[in-house]
Length: 586
Image (cartoon, rainbow, N blue to C red):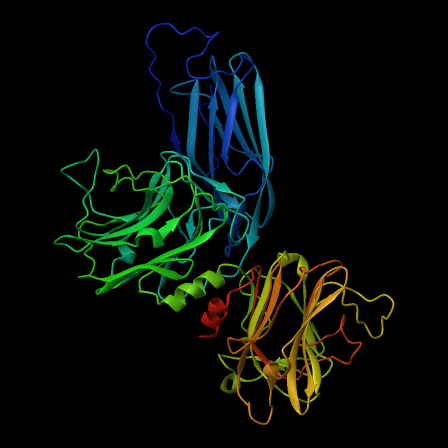
């Protein structure tokens, strides 16, 4: 009998727990399950059985972790796993033939593109069950950490820290949800399940954590992020709070209150904002949570606002070697702050104490779908969106740009991007740095619009998409936004407030506009220059975005190529707040 068969690039950690039974079991009424006697039951955890698993890696070949359990009322005789029709795992000798649990089967030969995963289980009666799903491996640019960033987990189908490409240790059976704040997946908590990660690279004088969170208030208390020491006096219910930190939640009159506890070596300090730190479980929206620790102060934030802040003697890291993610276990369970069944997305850890403005910047960047820094190329460094060059745009040269190099416009020249990769929805924002060249005296800057089949030579269909452009206003340049709502159009023209005098303003200015389902706003240097309500944007027939020109979809009024300079163009699938726009600017 063949025990198991593996390719050399597969690494397996196989767990088969033994169930102990007392007396004789009546297989007509199984004690451990209520399924009929009709073959194996397969529970696939990873890759996601709904086909939503996406692995993003800058490596041409990467790995995927496979997790599943198989149950049978009599006996399992064989388990077989295939990827793209190739067998990677085969087992037919089990410690417990009625329950097989594989928690970390790692397949190391995942290339770019779509892959088919097949799991087949056969029982001793010859009954066969098969589960098939697909997963996608996408190529992304190597991750460039932010200042002080030591961990970034986007939870896109894996638990990898993109800063150093190492994986967290999985305890229990956490999963992924396709209800994500950014991307397509987020961490989904499960009972007795969490992640751990080595804390050695985090333990300095300062520490910050930032993430998006969707609350599940059951159970009514849980640990969220913990770096703590062992509790040798209470190994079964550890609660040593003299070093490290514990960020957790618990019931407060029906709300959930978020608290931070920090060990100082000689004792502990509490950062409990009371009602200001509460979230109503009826709130089903994503919220942003963050906290910072320095040697003199700790601060807790909810949606970028301070909910608790105080001075203290500084953190002590004695005995702290692991960070727990989405549970207090294993170091902080004495008060029953165990696994959190909520969702988490975009977890970032820093070895510096972020400012409030930096926290708000984290909030903004989490919804960023495209970023063109224009540093000697037109590459999108966020999602790898393909940019097409029309004509002969160029670059300013390092000494002239706001930051690094920058886009320099040219006659009949611009960039286009297909919108299919931009996650167009009810909300949209754009932000960038801009140095105006008032010749020509009108130009398109950013346009997503539909074709104008009635006027192909001078297109001007404004019933959907948007048009952000400039034009002469008494010698100044006025910046305007036009948005199509499906049935017509809405204008956001700030008049003189939206003017730039080319003779006076010769340097870089920060431009931004935001569109929500009910309102649109235009900003210059973080100040609102136009804002009004409207019925929401329509994206009908909007398949491309033009950068630094109205062409090809908005030329009917002469808003062609812009010869100005642009830098650090960022696109978001959310409507940024004024605080977030200001944070990006600063």
